[in-house]
Amino acid sequence: MKIGIDQIAFATSDKYLDLTELAHARDTDPNKFLIGIGQSEQAVITKTQNIVTLGASAAAQIINDSNRDMIDMILVATESGIDNSKSAAVYIQKLLKLNRYARTLELKQACYAGTAGLMFARDFVASHPEKQVLVIAADVARYGINTPGEVTQGGGAVAMLVKANPQVISFNDDNVYMSDDVMDFWRPIYRSEALVDGHFSANIYQDFFKELWDRYRSTTGHAINDFKAFAFHLPFTKMGLKGLREILPEATEDQQAALLAEFEASRVYNRRVGNLYTGSLYLSLISLLANGSVQAGDRIGLFSYGSGAEGEFYSATVEANFKHGLQTDFNALFAKRTQVSVAEYEEIFADKAPNDGQNVMFDLTNDPNRFVLAGIQDEKHVYKQQ
Ligand code: CAA
Image 1 (cartoon, protein in one colour):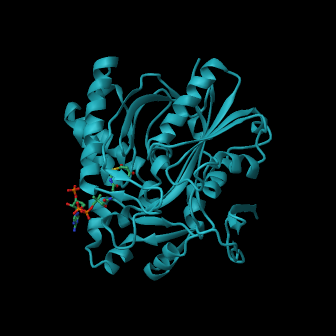
Image 2 (cartoon, rainbow, N blue to C red):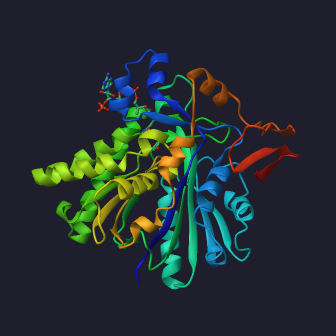
């Protein structure tokens, strides 16, 4: 039985920052950001948006009356959770009027947990073939104003429906994975901005990829020429290129050019959104499927990395109707966003939802988002659909 992603959708903030403008404001050559880092724009997340609203906006695109009651489990992968106890999946279940008789859970291991969610979903569907699982990978990436990580901020959510006989990709059940206690990136419970040892984290990412690729080859017998394309976790898009370059020498010259062309396709959307931690690999997968030349039957490789650290490499086969399962209209999404200046971005960055217990209701007059955090009352988040 084939099991995999049947539908996939993406949501991000209605605002973005142009990184050439950020480069000028930070007295940096714009090419460092555009080429050296590989990012052009960055999602700017306002205080009415968080993993719950972004996750609901992504999932709303794949929920309809025919599948609403078939979803048996809702898994939200995130490292920017809004409650230390209650799962974001419960809020999203309510906002989208999902099945009451469903399991709801939040998963955490830095940027890796979306992949864990997909694999838990796969195993669940394998033993319950008629059931479907909604997996949401949602995050807001924050490092701080004028930090080295600032150019790699961003945010958004990818929602994926996992079921038997999927239309987008089927998993090949050939996963290799590893974990190790590494302090490359972390966020203590009292902080809203991540701490990171930037260059070290990039080195660990590359080391994990290389080690897992070697392990994959030796355990499965597959080689690079079995692959049409690779999709990488993209904390910034140059990072995936560094990963791909680790294994390119194993390919012929023609295949190297083809893999690099597919890689360009896989970073089109990430370039304009920035890091969305758990969702970044899966935004890159959408970008590859929408903009690349992959076809039904092609094998693609997916590398998931979460600092701390955990990595997983697996392959999937592209299904015949894959374009029908891509639910987001990216032209419309990007056209609807409003550009903010560096000064406006800095103001929005500082204007966080309070975390000290005070009661507050936000002014939603000009807020175009369908799902919003409307305020906080009695230490409870108040979410609305507008
Ligand atoms: N034109 C073109 N390229 C230029 C340039 C110019 N004018 N100036 C510099 N560059 C290039 C540099 O040569 C360098 O390229 P290489 O990496 O290929 O050598 C690149 O731009 C970046 O330059 P620096 O290394 O000097 O940049 P930096 O020290 O300011 O920091 C960073 C870069 C470490 C990635 C930093 O942005 C950071 O800490 N980011 C957050 C951490 C991160 O994303 N880590 C990734 C792995 S961890 C992970 O994957 C989990 C996760 O999501 C966080």
